[in-house]
Image (tube, rainbow, N blue to C red; front, side, top):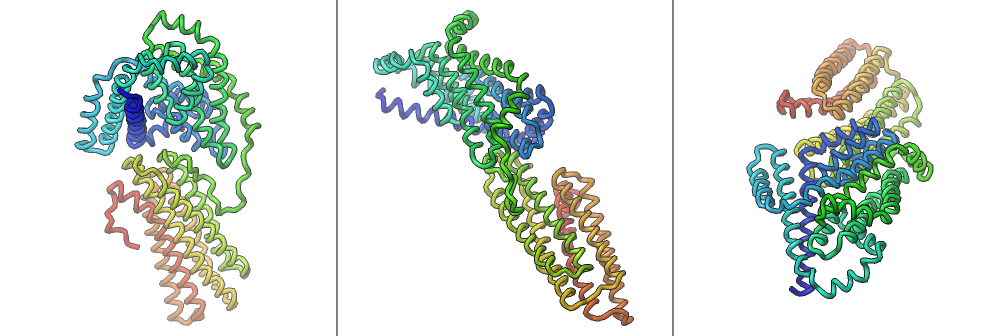
Amino acid sequence: MSATTVLIHLMGEIALLLWGINMVNSGVQRAFGSDLRWILGVGLRTRLRAFLAGVGVTTVLQSSTATALMVASFTAGGAVDMVPALAVMLGANVGTTLIVQVLSFDITLIFPFLIFSGYIAYKRGSSSRVKDLGRVAIGLGLMLLSLHLLSQTIHPIESSEVLKNVLTVIAPDPLILVLLSGIFAWMAHSSVAAMLFIMSLATAGVIDPHAALVMVLGANLGSAVNPMLEGMEGDPAKFRVPFGNLAMRVIGCLVALPLIDPLLTYMAIFDPNPARLAANFHTIFNIAIAAVFILPLPWIATLLLKLFPEKMRASDPGTPQYLDKDALDTPSVALSNAAREVLRMADTVEIMLRSSQDLFREDDISRVAEVSRTDDVVDRLYSAIRRYLSSINHEALSETEAKRLSDILTFAINLEHIGDIIDKNLMELAAKRIKNHLRLPKDSLEDIDSMHAKLLEHLQLAASVLMFQDIGSARRLVSEKERFRDLERAVTQKHLEQIRSGKTVGDTSALQLDIVRDLKRIEAHIASTGHSLLEQSGELKPSRLVT
């Protein structure tokens, strides 16, 4: 087999390995993304639980980068302490070693079964979760198939004189070996892929056990570089956890490098298999780092906070604060970010509603223009949220996450419509009242205040329904809409009776009816959040969505 042929085969087989890892990752996120995020959320409360959560989640995801992004969604803005966040990363490093342990044994014969059963589950599965688990099985099968092909490709080149001469030159220099394996892990975005490639080389006899263990150190360094590079853009606070993770690994490598020879002698007594030696050293190295650094994490966190102070947030309220582009490939994290930004949008709409309530009593025309500028903020946030949601990796969305995305986008659309109603309609009426020196009767102002108070209460309730998907709150929101309708009917009927009796001036009466009409439209947009959840649960038929 010529060198060119070998290179082409290696490229294809490594690509197959990476694609298998990607299928496992995306399949698990589709099937259990929200559950894994919940596990991390619970785990971030203490250091030990955070470590164990990092181990468990990363073992399933096979991506410490994805785990890091989930942690970032909790630590953004200081909501969760740095110490448990760093503990999660120590656990994530250990979690990536477990699949390597499994694959270090000769289990290549099961890949046909995994691919076949995965295909059946994907095609015939009765639920989206079964289909996603089928995707995971296919990914594992492809990983094992790629390892089988790699061993067949690498084995014949063991006797290559050119390769032996190259290895003779670089083997005595551990820094070159660390650099080569580090670059491979960085390019592959996966320490698992790098480790499996190193194990294939060791099994074929292309590299000796000493060189394999040195390259394991490089793989650990290279896989820690990607999260750090992704954290370099934007707020320096995002740089803290990945930099701390890399720094702990660098210190570990500096300590472990001189100890490789005695460690190799001791480890070979228990299992001399080259692939198993590399896998065992990979696990021991990461467990040792976790054991050494988990106690001094508070001091490490303090140092990182001083080195990378939080960037001052933009004073422009229309600038998104939570739409982290690095999270787009991890749907559960990206959806959480979008939901947080939508809550900011809801807070801005609440400010507009309160200003609207005041402007039917006050005569400050400058506040009308201020509300219009606030609507521009709502429009900009809506545009940013819509672009962000459209950029999420839809291939990795589970059925539940797809519905969640739709709910967030629908809520943002309704908020944007509410902002437009306040700006284009209510503010026009407020300006008309001020310019024409109109005074609404006291009882009418009380009715308008009551309706505004209901809208503000319902807006908070709608935000709660969106965030917690609580059926009880959704029922309450829908029932509150009916009460609001009754209030609107009573106000309208009272003003019609006043018109008939001649107790109100025509312009004032028309103004009152227009205000009530627009407030009712706002209520319809708010209540649609409750309607949507009740429809999904089967409690409400779409035909009942009448405003």
